[in-house]
Image (cartoon, rainbow, N blue to C red):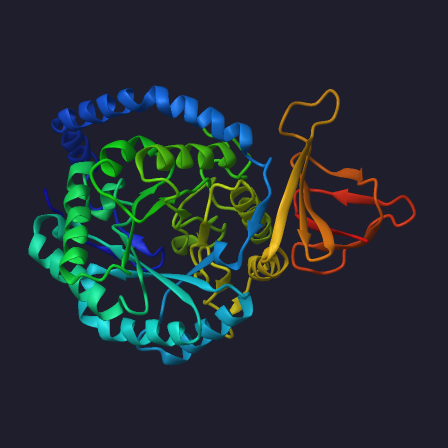
Length: 440
């Protein structure tokens, strides 16, 4: 089954060209595939349950070193517009991030030379690089062309860009893959291509499943050995990262992600979140989503910091990439304006990287006030950096006044600007926007 591939340039994703009736017919015809998925998950269910419980018990109860390598940011080079590519590199410098991910579509194989130049430049400036290899429907049917693309990408980019995420969001039919067996063909081709080249420093990342669909992991991870386990772990369908979807908050989704990674892969295999963001309201066709998932720029900045804090202090995630830096509908920078406008999320991201990189997470407090339901109180994450201690704090319900029982030196908002607080009583006013409370 094949449909003409159409790229949605404003939203940076394919159009869903297959009619709904055709997609429904396809899924009905492939019922044995879903039956096999069910059987695979039933086999693993008891181990998943007990492992998940054990992971949840230890989350936020261990010291976690927050290294600079944990913070990732995705970018898209602007080929043919060198001045814009220069702006992207300059903005990267400002964020302080050192790990960069970029997308490499199979249909842009003829531009590998331009990608190589971009990669070498960032590599020479000390950035760590990862490439997300995008597929389309033709790649499933034309195995030779897909293999040629993989081989060329590994050969041209591998020395400077050692990490390659194989496939992208393939559990959405608009990305050209209609079931996990088709994805396995693409992933196995990547393993074979890497092995033929013989470069052991090339690391394969996958399975690049988008959203909360970890039931796809058992049959895939038992068939293909990835060097890094990845998830495109969005929570924008329910808003705040602390909100629950089917009973799972972002923290619980991360725990389940790590559960599958631990059970299905060799010990200590790194776990990465390779894509997440919150699309923005009033951006029209530039937004990759419509309706409720879209948020204001201020809320996006708040959620960005909260998501990173939840993910990295869990001790379960080795790296998380925000997608992406420059994009009108969801990026840290709006490129529709001249000069490009940095959104509140840009300053929030850059200051978060500077504050948390090199720190140690030392504990979390969750405070639910008497008479209120769980998940409506304060979120307090404690860190130590050098000889200084600070807390990253926000509240999940309304506004609060909180005393920390120790001397406060300064309170900074999410972007590093001094925030007002009650110096006499040592009380900080909290809301949903993260604040950094620096102790003396």
